[in-house]
Image 1 (cartoon, rainbow, N blue to C red):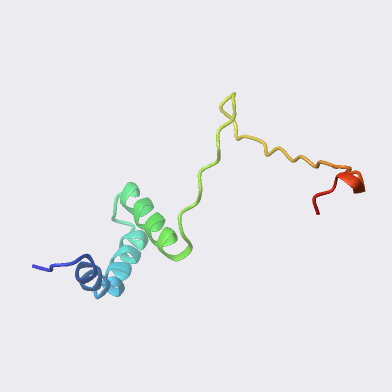
Image 2: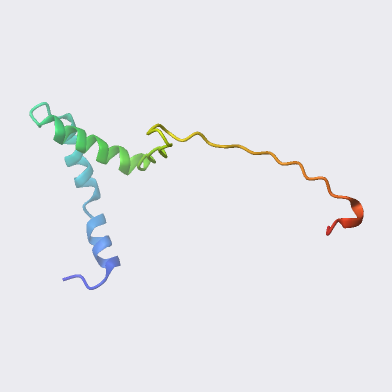
Length: 82
């Protein structure tokens, strides 16, 4: 049995090429269930490009709009700390 997290990671990484080939095979297989094909495609996409970040929901269930604020500060030279 592996003793450390890094040993487990190293063992798993040895199978990366095979795992990707299996996922690609499932994704391309017309005989595979649609759910399996979608899952395989998502796993490949996430591995290659990273997971998409979900939108932040606003008050009414829609995505929250960012708020931009520009502030102008006027400082008298005698009161400036800079």
